[in-house]
Length: 139
Ligand SMILES: Nc1ncnc2c1ncn2[C@@H]1O[C@H](COP(=O)(O)OP(=O)(O)OP(=O)(O)O)[C@@H](O)[C@H]1O
Ligand SMILES: [Mg+2]
Image: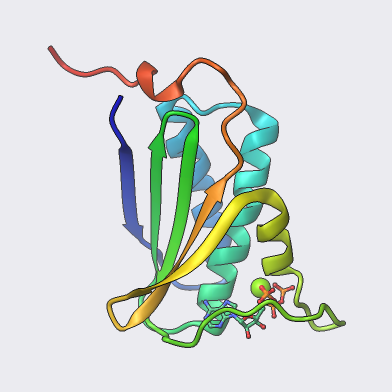
């Protein structure tokens, strides 16, 4: 079993969250992670992290995806060193990181090239067969 990886530069704009949701779900399907309910949670996590990077972060935004067996990690990096912080929800928001926490196994922030990267480890993929094994290698 090997780790599958994908990274891409996020086009910045009002469509960033939607574009990233579609891209991530598409790549995961190609890799064999096609469970609908699980993918819906992944899409929410991607949406919230990308929205945060675009709204509160700065510089270029890079989205990463790593899959190893049932474990899948989504990461979103931006160029601002200001760190995301959970805050009490109010009429202007504060629900994004709450959702990320609820829908992931765990998440953390790490330094990344002068800015930071938020890494979210998703709930284990529910299918007992290892999806990554379905990604073939050329003989
Ligand atoms: N990428 C980021 N860079 C800098 N600050 C961030 C980043 N992501 C989140 N934050 C900070 O963490 C706070 C909490 O984020 P959270 O997503 O929970 O709420 P929100 O973005 O303010 O509102 P909502 O997501 O509900 O629309 C933000 O208000 C912001 O101050
Ligand atoms: Mg937010």
